[in-house]
Image (tube, rainbow, N blue to C red; front, side, top):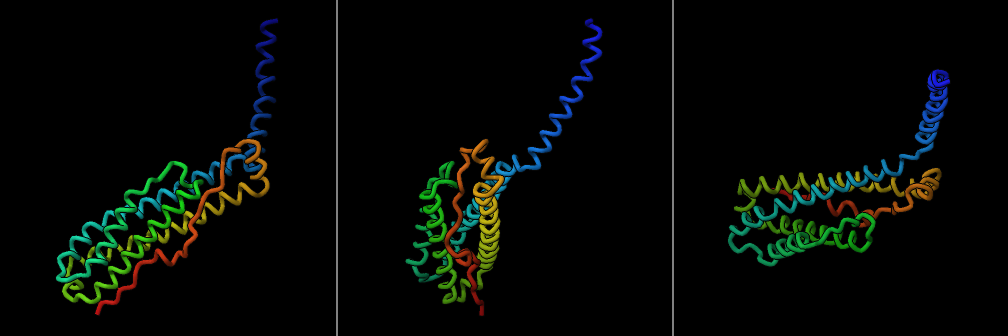
Length: 206
């Protein structure tokens, strides 16, 4: 009797394993994993945005010190950059910023203000031939332009990742899975200002 039960056990397990395998394939094919997958992709894209903005912020102290050495450089322009960077540094980035409209908007506005201040500074530099010929400044200016380009790319990738994620939450079959399994998933915020605002400033050297 016991021997028979053991002998039949593999036979019983076969159909059960087949059913589990078929169910797994069915769920995978129906997109049960799409929402968490797109969620992780959007968060990864956001991390790149943060990395590039931080890279820009890290370059500013050296830029400020270099520009300070120029005689009679516009103090107001330089202070605007310093204040904008300080505001960015003091901005709290909550864990839920991607779904927190107010926090996201504050972050976006502060970064845009810093970008504008930097653009104005680089335009003013045109009036200072000695500064434009400073090798240290030229290197920093080149790094800033490269960083602004990376910011634009990172923002673009994040916007697209959020578009895919938010669309999945609102369309079939993602809407069904959202209701059944991922009800805590919320639409993510995205950038609203024109992307060209993050492009590297165009500075013509004569």
